[in-house]
Image 1 (tube, one colour):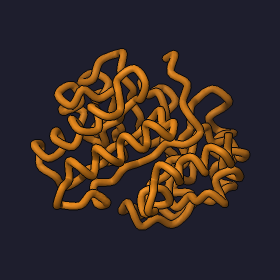
Image 2 (spheres, rainbow, N blue to C red):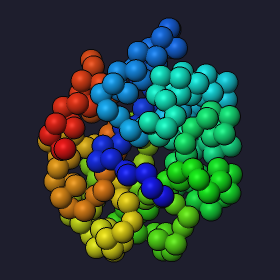
Image 3 (cartoon, rainbow, N blue to C red):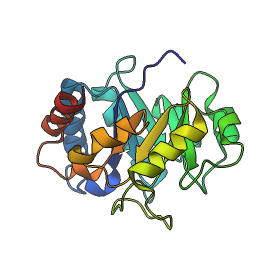
Length: 213
């Protein structure tokens, strides 16, 4: 894949989207993120109806143009085409990466869970463009029964993966800890609460870019 994965991977959880004026909120947020230089964004909605997911997706796609920004849908590989998104992320317990690839085709992005304490057996052979690793630290935005692996865990997983796979480190990452995680071998850091629980996620993203490059 020719797409260059960025160092910062924003994860927009539907929990931060207000019930009232939802479309207007997403229009403003998506435009702000696009103007701030976001090139990759995951939209995660574990509980919403298909109609809600597709309505949110349509607004994000409208203000985050195809060809400039890759939009990834969490879990729902079956809705990627209808959402006009660029790929899917399937986690542990979701579809296998091979099934997700079959559904979205060869030209879209597929991300999947790569491991916590160690890489999952055979995961390097999965038809995925990036592997999510972690949790690095404790997180409040995603339910998990896995213990945090810390910076040293990221370093260990990079050693197991070798230099080529794209590793996306996730969970509890802040601006103060992000650089150490990248230095340990993560290709990018997935960030949710540290961006989207701020008053101005677009401005906060610019802070991260200025710090991390």
